[in-house]
Length: 160
Length: 279
Image 1 (tube, each protein chain N blue to C red):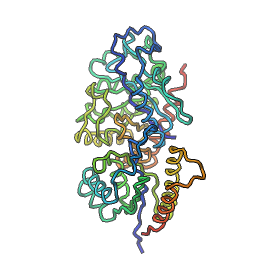
Image 2 (spheres, helix red, strand yellow; image 1 turned 45 degrees about the vertical axis):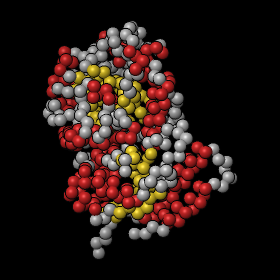
Image 3 (tube, rainbow over the protein chains, first blue to last red; image 1 turned 120 degrees about the vertical axis):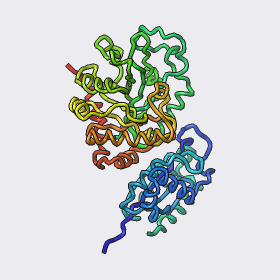
Image 4 (cartoon, rainbow over the protein chains, first blue to last red; image 1 turned 90 degrees about the vertical axis):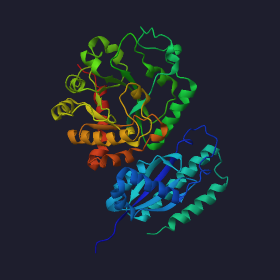
């Protein structure tokens, strides 16, 4: 039986304004990004860069499966044979809904399992970074714990 | 280990007074100091590069037409002193000379100017005419203290001004030079400000199209060896991670392993070659 193979892309949208270490504003959570906006932006990027044929190749299987506004993590599913086109379109994305972003593909895998593991690890790293910025002590419970638990559940609930 | 060998740095506005630079190592703050705001901007970009995974970064100073011992100011020495040290990141200094018709007679890479050129770790040439292209490939890639290590190409100009002759390219690669592809052209957006003033780049939709055509041509002629990919990015939001760039290169018909080499192995051997003293 010829199986339909997928590639799961783990994309982090790096916010250019928060990379500056001295930024006090917490701009990540104030931006109204969500899965649909990302899908639209991605579709526009594919059409601009690869034309209608590109969209034809990628469009049927392209799916934004998960997005977390706090850590700017996005999980996208594409068919394996066209994943390079979709990956190229992600790289060539410059802005979503007028907000300039830098898309960075953190992990590419063929199964959900490893994408989930990678996503959870990535979330933890980002939260750790936030915590050092706020200079929290280790045993201080903060809202990030809830977020971590919730997002881990959401990620593990993903299915094909 | 990922390399970004083109971090464009332009001279700050404070160098507007006449440069009486007989001293080849300018440390006077009145001539080459970068304002704190500029330093902050550069530090922010370095933070971003670190986050994206680049470990070796070469600051690039561009000079038009030729280096003139009387007016040349090495802005990078001053810059490096003002940046804070980052463990795990290596900073290098690079000089790019934009060659055009006027440079055909000679542009300063002679023995007399060795001391000017020495502080830089990497030297690059950016030819814009067929004659300068053959000059760059043939005479200047021969091993010597003055050798040009990189041949950068203006990929966003409409109609690459010269034909990439296979023989020239092959000689250059055999001598150890590499050809550079700047990925900033693919993303679009404002490109290197200094290049625009020299009239070498073109932005906007046509710039992007030319980039794809020209980059594909470079890949075809070099057959994938002897290519390095670097940033050349002027605006922060155009930076991309190394894996993403490798994927873009595969879209240019470059095999996956060669694309990976272009951002890891080729720059590494280039820098090792550049650092080695020649007899």
